[in-house]
Structure formats: structure tokens, C-alpha cells
Length: 266
Image (cartoon, rainbow, N blue to C red; front, side, top):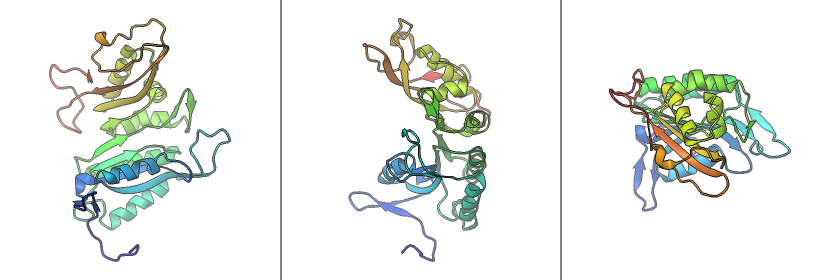
């Protein structure tokens, strides 16, 4: 019933028919794009999360005809920050952000954001949810663009760097996005390590660079000389993923490394 008048704890069922209760750490607020044609943003994220037993609350940051990589562009609307605030206020008014209401939200996932006001509103939402649940994990995909091209207003870079990343527990940028956020051009594993250190210093615990292209120019890309487990082809340019983690005393402490500890990659 779409208009059920009574609040209830959301549940999913797995393939065996067992009920999966969406407790606090199994609820996700996913704030990403929506496209009519194709599978990116929330259309790509929600169903896999549900299959894993998560209850997903969905807010679409934009409503586009297709993703922004098409040669003749796209049509649609971009939500602004006031719209996001209104939606979250409605959830809060009905107790859907607290553990006493809808079970609490244990995870926040953000992706494509189409306006500066919306991204600033995301900061407020993340702070609000962490106020309700200090263990709420924020996974941020700082979507900016790829292959030297911006998909979003360039003003989002400073907002991500100054306001969003200090709140994030995990970020999943691509190479272009890392370079924009850190100012480091990545040509080697060592460059990637330096960039990750900058992101860690902003407060991010886990950095996963989802794709890096290393030019085959004779530079130092020897995996044996770097603390990483990076799979690299041997012919032409090399492409890989790069993960780095820094541990802190507590999830939202002052983000100082533990005594004697340095940033480590894995």
C-alpha cells in the first residue's frame, strides 16, 4: 500500500525468504543523480544495496534524460539546496532520522551533485545525521568529471575540499577528481601516494582512487618500491586502482594519526 498510514520498520527479504530488518546500520541515505535512460547514480546504486540487505532512502540530486557524457548533451532539472533541506526536514518531522522513528540512518552515500547550493546543503544533512548517530558512515563519490573534462560547475571543487571531505569516512574519486582536489598530477604510484596523504590530512580515513592511467614513460612505477598492491599491465599505458587507509583514534576525532603510525596503502 503506497499510502500506509502507520510508520513501520522497513524490511527486505533475501533469496531464501528470510526477513532482513533494516536496523540503523543497515539504512542508507543515497543522494545521487537520476537518469531516465541508463544506469548511473541512484539507478545503479539502489538495487545492489537492496540485494545486500540495506534499506535505501533515495534523494535524486538531478533528474536528467541521460548521463552527461552524451555528445548532444542532456535535458532535465538540477535540484537546489533548499529542495534537499525541505525533503530532509520532512523526514525529520516524521521521526525518520532518529533511532526512535525509522530505525536511524547508519550510512550516507553521495554521488553526482549538480549545484553549489545543493552540495552545501549536503554538508548540513551529513552533520545532522551524524548528530543523530555518531557512528553514521559517510561514503562520498566526489563527482567532478573525467579525462580532463568537468561534468559539474568547477566551483564545487573548493566546497568538496573545504567542507565535504573533512566529514567523509570514505571517498571514491577517479584520477581527474583526485588531481583537482589535491593539485597533484598523477603520473606514478608515488604521485598517487602523495595525493592520498593530502586527502588523509583533510580527515578522510579511506581513499579509493577508482581508476588511474600511468603513462609508460619509463618513470618509477615499480610496485616493489611502493607499499601498495596494484595490478599493472606491462604493455603501453597502465591502468589500475589505488587504495589507501589511515587509521585514527576515533571516527570523528581530531584526525591525528596514531602514535608512530603513518599513512598506509593497501
